[in-house]
Image (cartoon, rainbow, N blue to C red):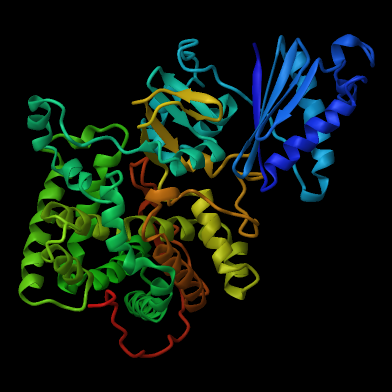
Length: 559
């Protein structure tokens, strides 16, 4: 039986559900679907066009025609509609009738109804073997061409539906509302990291990369996650991050001065190496208390470590670069922890060491080490890619650069649209940890693996009109690039601050900034973390910098 679904964002979901059912009930003696252009061979007023049953109770309702029906559900901030019928033409009649009635009722709020085909429920049929099956899409995404440009594959996923069954215990989620639902639902969490069997423990002992993440806030579930996050989040409150702006401005201007000096003879420069990496690593290392002399080594180590996050999983072997990077970072921070224990400073490492040494159960030795590695790597990886992805768009669109430089385009809007259009984080995963879960009406059995395509959610036409167009003036732009719910990136506001500070100052300082015509940019060969390896640019003649600024030190609160 063909079926479709629509999810309408509105804070008045239950009210509109009740109004729609009441409105249809009054029309039950008329041809409801006569409002739609399709007649299916029946004239207006025919018996089969009249609803046989219209009911609503609290957050649920149904309009039943006998040959098809539409169920309605008020789900928080969304009104969810599901239509099904004996054939595709009758399904279209229901879709048109319900959409027309609901849009008329909600015209003052600008309600729009976008129907999507509903994929088969788990276990009802094997996934299709065609090029647009969920399994084929995953395979293509993990291939070199898919990693280089995943967006056509995301569009293929959207054509199937917001939730795609890959197997009985694996689902691919690409719709914005569906991804947001999974991220916010506490029933979905991270995989357990405790081995079930002794041989599993032996296998995991070599997987240093995954083990280093498994005790951090990135990969833990409540109550451990909540306990650790409440301790670390003190540094990243909105007020605290806003207070860092003078220090971020100083760091940006210092790097722009270096760019001007290094290109004074007309040479081009790799923006990724000389700015996009340098800015966020400077900021996070100052917060942590990592000496400047050590910072050059972290880009390679972070790049190697995060290969363990890729869907292919090939980098998680015990002798792979990810594990070598995990061991090196663990050794580095073990040494730094010892130094701060003996001589505390005004930094985050010292604050977390003090919390560990209080021995009040807030932080274990393993958790301290794992979270310091995470804060360092996550503190610059995503921001580096955000800066590179954003500049690549500006280099390709001089009109956008001019609008941003003049103030015609708001910097905050530009940054949000970069996050939506070319997210630095494309994929994350969850596991169904509770019973009776469903996403967009699709049951998700306990223990199922759920692959969330964040980059696809950000390009969902049901959420964003013309999703493949870059439009920094979009309203209500809330990309899921940094996640949502309890595991939202703890430093997302700091990343936004750094990008919002960097772009206008970069464009103002170098009005003739352009792509290097002799050297093409290169993408990182990644899917999960999307960004550039190199981005060669020419800066042209620079405007005078602001001059020396008072040194502002980044520090952790209460230290």
